[in-house]
Image (cartoon, rainbow, N blue to C red; front, side, top):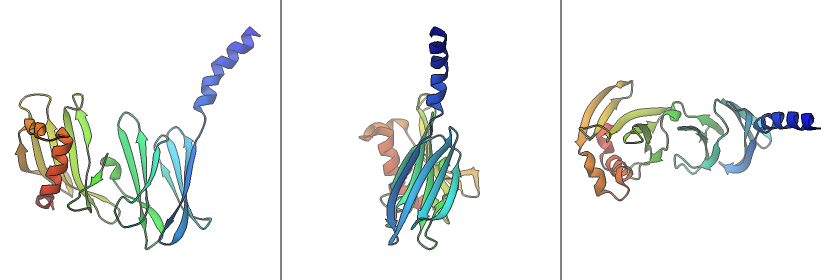
Length: 216
């Protein structure tokens, strides 16, 4: 009995870890009913299935662990889009925009490079992201981008260096054809973040909303 109990304890964690998950919901876009399902194939792969009136219209494989799934109107066109977030050491995001022309959800290429993205209030078709770049989040990056033909186009970047002196914040215009080609647009004293209620997040939000035209 003791030996059997020991064997069961050894194998129990493997049984728990092998459990798979499925998420699904029903929405209405473009006056049509859609069913959206995210199914975990294994710990590194998800399957996104969308159906309209019970007819399968697309299947996408996502190389990610199980994640948070949101139906959100990301591009403010009045239709629900699919945003999948993998919550690992660093958040990874996958966006599927609804295309009212084809009535399909289309994956936005390179969107996973822009975590925690938000639309500008001054120009909702432009977006900015944020990610840590080292030194316990004292070095950080915010990217400005737009979405064109279901592809994220990089056009600007703010780089914050608050770890090693000299501290600074620099904003660059980025060549969409080559991320390595950057033109310095602004240099901001790092302690300016103290002038904002939300510190660096407040500075980032205000800077992009006021200055995005310099990066078009």
